[in-house]
Each structure stands twice: as structure tokens, then as C-alpha cells.
Length: 76
Image (cartoon, rainbow, N blue to C red; front, side, top):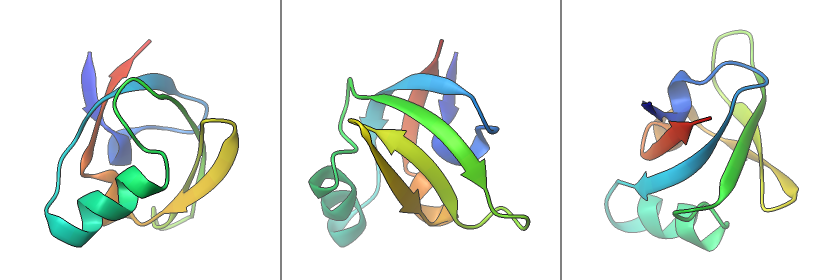
């Protein structure tokens, strides 16, 4: 099942299938290691849902909700 990373709940895992977005946002995500085929784990969400903390490629990364909405993930 394909979901956007922003729709994940804490503890959910998946594999990144596509990084959408335009220009600087997409480039920033790719530079941080958020690339297709990478495994991702949703660690936690802030009380209001923004920002979110994920684990990708062995390190923790904090993303804004708008950035996470650009990442398509296939859930396991």
C-alpha cells in the first residue's frame, strides 16, 4: 500500500518509492538521503503533527509536514 510519509503513525515502517516536489524541496530531501528504495521508520510526531522524526539510512532526521507530504512510501 502506498502512503505519503506525512500520513504515517509512530512505529510504522516502509520503503520510499518516489520523492515528489519541486526545486529546492526535492533537492534538499534527496541530499539528506531520502531517496527511492531507502527504508524509513516513523519515530514520532509532534503533538500538532509538525515536525515529524524519522529514521532513514541509520540516522534520525526531522522533517516538516509539508516536506514529508512529498515522499511516497510503500508500507510493509
